[in-house]
Length: 285
Image (cartoon, rainbow, N blue to C red; front, side):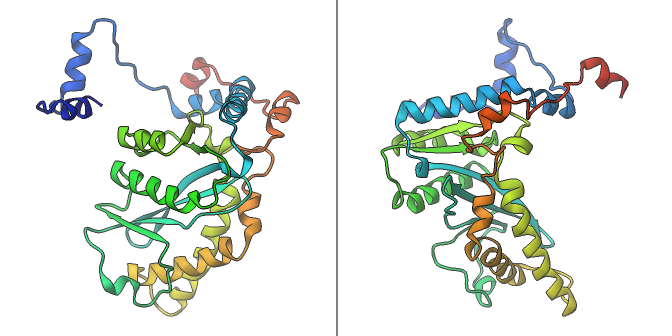
């Protein structure tokens, strides 16, 4: 953010230790270490936190007059093929999935990656040094999402449910959303196992289908999966699990997921009734 403001003023950028030095200069600011993950995850299973989340979603929908088909959830998942690769998928509340966005490790695209596959031209493929998403690919995906979902938009605004990954909250990401009437809401930290509908309902079947494709390659004595083998295998898995099986996308929005209207009722009925471990429990465990 600091560098963005300085760029607008044509001023020199801050150094790598600027944030740390800024905190030292401000006596009211303190650095705190995060608690253990298990404690934070259990804390976010508090029914009050869950109810407040659904209330926020419902209030946002009412405030902007968002149509149910304009409510989108997206998430990313990883695949191993010798090196890591990432797929970002977005699905709306009606169960319609936009074309996937794939991130693979590399500096440039090579023609031989795509010679043996039938990947459609509207799929997006990006490269990063390690196959993980970064701020740049996060913005690229957002533009891909805007292009693919705009033709199906019914109302003025679209609601995009996302997680707390840094690449989904960059300044450029937020500005692009504002310029294109995309409202973003972030699920509570460490709660994706409860509120993220894509993890089990969509990514589970996709990874099982991908695993079957890899088994076929292993039977042919192909033990090292390169991009040349990855793209045909992934395309076949995506076709079988998502494109040709719309029930997979619809199962993602089962009761208990982010966008199901029955979730608030489930919270009131005590569906999320977990015991939150105390700090003493964490120290003795």
